[in-house]
Image (cartoon, rainbow, N blue to C red; front, side, top):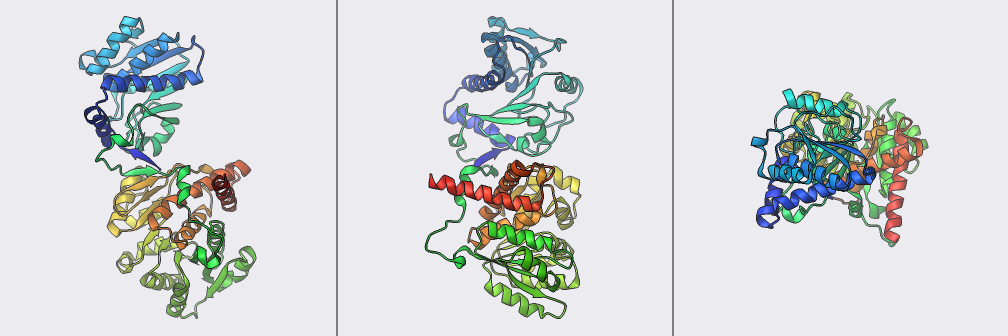
Length: 503
């Protein structure tokens, strides 16, 4: 997994690299410029390429000036527009301006009217903490509207490095070359849209530069698939966990089907679906591998729940159960008695929102997987507020209830009880389809049943779910994707991992 840093953490990391590891600021700036230049040259190898580099007075501007000089020395047609106040420029930026002048790089004090093939943004760095207005807003607007390939140095100017918010206006990059670590604002939306393709360059700032810093956020990567539960030759279906899924209601059988299929595809040994009598035939036809436990209005709910929980290694509760009186009683008794890891989704969350006192009776390790609307109901906060502050909202709820919160959005955040978390980068917009959340519940539930702890099970499950969506997109595209395609995508993901192990 990789760390994702916020602006404060990254600044401290810079200081550690210079003060405690002895790296000179000028060397870091030169290496940052070299990394950016290499990415530009990879895409535009022709020396006659016209490049406009827009620089501010901070050290980000110094990086940009160095980029301009290095491209100029390679024969590129380079112009620097220095938009900052030279009297307020940092020592390093003034040094870079002097060097560039000595080498003959063209430096302008007014925005050039001529066209450019490449526009490089080095106006603001990761420290921006207020809205961009006036002259600088106009400059960013010009840069964005101008034709040409757009490259941001470290971060697209106008984007909050912490939240991804647009600070009034922002540069819309095709490529961002950032240094050391990805920044939270480059991963979260809307910042991700302005970041474009993200390249994280090694300039001498690495995990050893963290020292006492413990970054709050991480992201899963392909190597983390090693966390998947191990399978051995001498085993049986009981070796890979028994998952109880309380799902489905009258005319809502699909949620149970998707969760059960996903759990089996994820390697769960046994899946038992607790659902209403009306869903019996559908489940038998669609998921014949699943064991059924059906109930109706005449069922002794306490006895039913106790029987199912006695069998289960983990529980998924909520997909499609509705909010009837029977569903409410069933969920109440389950949450009151469950001792094994439990995931709540969909209608279970809506019922919890109606009964916030239920949180006090839950003793089991808990994962919840709300989308924005469900999180709004759980917290009583507006959807827009949650959407704009995914990480802190998820973290606050996870800390409050000491649970794992999977807050679903285009960039799903998995918030852990200790205040740390993950931002997921796998997946695509084709997964915005009915039933995709039920598939996720089945994936995470299967990992829980196979004895993976709640925190890694949630983060890994989200990552694999996204990979399955990416695999589905390769087969059916984005527009035509359905939840069943994501279930089938799990086959590609897990088979690829098995093949990798065998090599």
